[in-house]
Image (cartoon, rainbow, N blue to C red; front, side):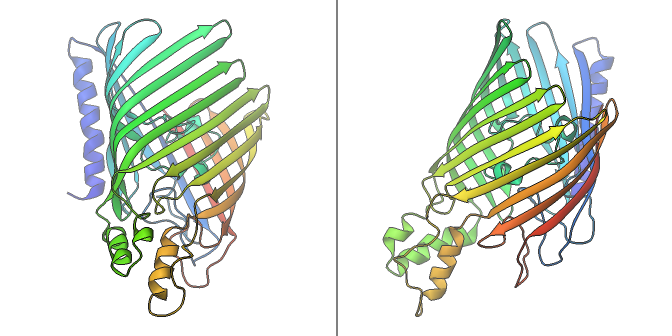
Length: 397
């Protein structure tokens, strides 16, 4: 069965199950969905623009695959303390075909007014907008800023979590702690996180939301012949100390982020700052951030954001030769330990023309630093900056 047919089948199964549950004398079932229909293009044919973990992107010819998706969710409530939720998502990801994935599938048990527990597959609370980063309608921008949101791929984990929420006067505090494992299918490899722990804290008071997140994991990169062979080759030519820093098995890593959203009168501010650290040079230590500013005028919200990423770990091994027979190996190793660095300035506008749909138009000016940035399939001589144009409709139902 082709990937598009599998995508349609997965959503059809969710729809049939929800219909059957509604017809039966059983739990109360609610259904909802979301999607984005968008076209994206750039001003160059020398490289492709992609969202994180996509195998193919866009050049000068507009394509729908980069920023379009469709999601369908079913929740069955059995009583006041027990419910089950499933969410299917169709999008282009690690292959150049639309594919369906089971984004969420968990049982939720409410222990009290403040505490609840979930078991199954949940969204990993890595980022400020982790739970709704695929729901375009819930976000001002047409896509989450790549400088921050490409640092950890994968949006779900299999395991359990505990949720706490309580209001102290005008302030609401929400806390989430989860643990489990995750398998992320990336372009050219798979990454297994086992175990993974994640802490998510949110404080809301009036127009201000403050958020802190921390995730720790041991991870292994699998099914990548080139990355597996690299430390073996480096060790075989006498650079054991370098090879020790190129491990891709049971590597410790952490991701820490803080963010804020201020929605006051007509003003809208959203910002996030993140730090990634690992014990391998092949997954680089990075610092990334973005800040977005918007202003509502009736049903229109023009906005601007700037994003940037820098690398804290070394970008070359000075102990390896740059001339002679090993020069090519040195160049390969040094290329492998360089993060995709870039900065983005973006202008956009959101038009809420309906109570459940919004039109967005956004122009990104992306400036790669010391290489191609996050662009893929780069031709010789490529350099930035690159303008990326996107227009689409976000909807919920």
